[in-house]
Amino acid sequence: MKLRRWAPAFFLGVALILLWWALTASGTIAAGIVPNPVDVVRRIGTSFSAGYMLPAMLTTLGEAAAGCVIAAVVGIPVGYGLAKSPLFSRLVEPYVAVSQAVPAVAVAPLLVIWIGYGFAPITVLCAIMVIFPVIVSTSVGVRGIDHDVLGAARLDGASGWRMARSMEIPLAAPHVLAGLRTGFTLSITGAVVGEMVIGGSGLGMQLTTAQGGADVTGMFAVIILMAVLAAIIYALALMVERSISRKVGVDVA
Image (cartoon, rainbow, N blue to C red; front, side):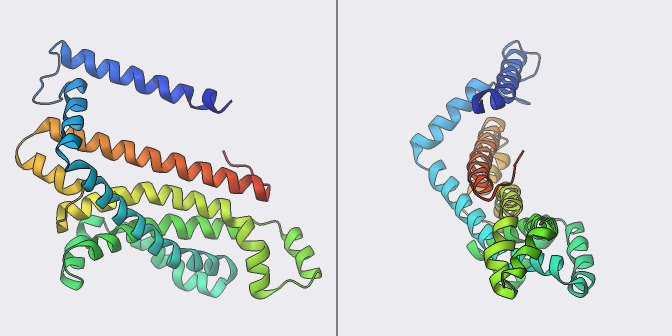
């Protein structure tokens, strides 16, 4: 059943790759504009053999993961507060929404001035990109909990932190994980953008190097690796989310 669920996406991907290969192999699209997928795969293999691509991927992944941790530590309590306190919601929610109007590229130079270069500002940039879906998903998850369930828990004496720990957080966990799943894939983008603007040694720097040399095949290789990395993270997060959802009895699409 799980294989059948992903079969349409798999076959669509294969069809797109075959179309890509046909257009480039026939010369319909010039190699200087879009490289042949065989050349891209060959470049990926060469980059790993040369020993510089794996460290770059791990660097970007580390920055993205650290940003997600920061976003979770800050965003989950904020989202919970938005759901539980009308006053806090009226105070904070407009600013949370407005924060999404500022692009990451505009924030990155400021982080350089405030924090400096290296791992720290890129991690903060990732956290900024991730925190919004975490806040929203947590708030939606807590607000969506059945009030009858919470009422029954109160009759059993649950309140305050005990209510949050034993009922609200577990029941909202699938929504929180959905926000983190979306956020983690966004954090890969944030890390790459940060490396391109701030500097670093991850995939963003590899992309900048390829761009500087007008190396279209190299650029495609980095972009494909970014997409694969994001897809793997998304799939793993979805597996964890579904496992927890089954335990708490919440259905995840």
